[in-house]
Image (cartoon, rainbow, N blue to C red; front, top):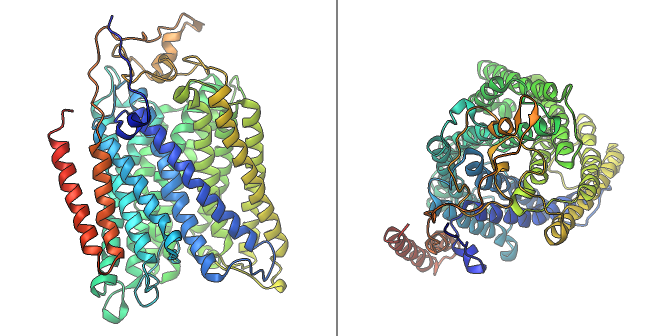
Length: 600
């Protein structure tokens, strides 16, 4: 029997095309950027804890609002989701790797440099102050003559390029590389959620790309796409942004739904209730996600017909979402429930996302939306969906799959402490914002007068933010401690249901020594339990019979990503910019040439 030794060392991380290492790189980068997004949030909450504070200026506050939203969505949630996509998709479908390993590496390096370029705006002293939605005409040269908007535009373009590359890669992987016997209706729900997410990505990203090109043309060449004085329309930007922006919400929430759909059955010791309905619901959410964007725009004067259509579409999308919630509850009902940290986060996802969904249904009504638009009620709704929903679900996934990533269990005691700090802190932070919004407090205001009656709930909200920060520090300690001294997990610590638990932890570089074959949904569970009795599980052998063919490590994805970043950076320099961009283009050409002649 041949022995295969994986490559190690720093060089292996810089040149890796292994989907598991790239997943870890994505996860580490996401939490690196979370530090920035978290600090930005704490600074904003500190500024608002009392009336008329002057800890930071209005301009600084606007920059924090812009960078916090941008960072948390594009540089934390999306790469953290990509970490799960990278690590888990091939393992759960029985594949040796993703379809295009070097493209996978390219997507990570492009994302990382795009995120660094975006945050370089702090060092340059030109932080964008246009909100994470960058509404026109704030992005025009008239209102933002410096390069702050250019940092935002180019950073988002580069990060979006990374997402587009990876979405095509994962979609092809799921369609073409499933193991024998795994038909579409035998895939785990997480894989279904992942596949629909990729469709949303490669259909919505071109829209925001075009819109950003139009802003760049307005700023650089004086075109008037979004300038009413030149025949353009500021409302057109809102249409283009939200055609991308609302599917983006489901891009962030569908993977968390898939994760929760894997966790709840394992810790309830029951199959997922209504598997076909869950599949159809995920697909329906993806389809309807493109039909609801203008509910963000009821106050722009769309007219009764448009408002009626988007109001009804928004109400309709709550139907498949509600079906999923009832299916999760039905899975829990009568189960042998184990309250592990992963399961606590999954259950909290269901509860918190339901609260966010109920306030979302309220905003489907134009008259209610008129009253609540641009108030803190919308901030509360948004965070209950994306924090109480996506973030809680993703933390459940971290605690659930951490043993598979690293071969060690996270501390359950520390995990429970983190969970309760997060639950208490999150609800103290954002539930009072419902009251503040109904009392008329506008969002994105950097201060308020003492006679408005908003002081008490702002104090409560800020205290909640500090409690959440303590929970985040505890999680960081838990990860470091568990990596160094955590309990070794073994291949299947949770008695899981899907294929990844048939492998040792962490999995070998080649994944499966013998190609798996499945006969039904949750086939691994059915291999372990026959007529309700557990039998000796047929774990995968640790070594293949012959050396596997694995893609060679490559420097070219890293070099190509550097070239793309240099090409974009040239836009910030008036005299030397042409040379920087030209050098970047040369690096791209060299990298593409080297890539094409490299042995795969």
